[in-house]
Image (tube, rainbow, N blue to C red; front, side, top):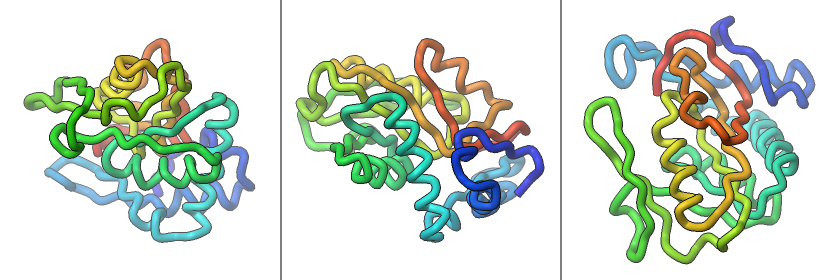
Length: 194
């Protein structure tokens, strides 16, 4: 793993275990398009100890934020958020791309670099006033994360925090999440994409 990766919330682990988690994230150059350095978490997901360490770190964040329910953004947020919800004895809310949930749904649209997208939550699945931890794998430009926070609030929830495995600092996604508690397990300082 590149030297530009620095531990943040993984500091609660022994140093060698934090390093192992970091090393299980593999750089894939020119994917999905030329010039993009993709951070592949597949090896981390396949490693029982590394995955357990990440879930433990996310769980510590959730306990600190005092959450009632965990939400995950499609699709890797599902893979990370569901075991965190289970570890905490809480429910899990999938925040899905438009058209993937049966009606009725609540929806928030947001702009992408080329076009727009929408994220949805099944109506009635979020208890009004519930404190929600939103989890995803990567914080890049922050567009999807900002839409997820807006959707939770639109449905009557309170965003207790947003937690990410990786933050690509050069893309300044954190700036779009002003006013929210944002935690990352690892930060990457150079320009990358996902």
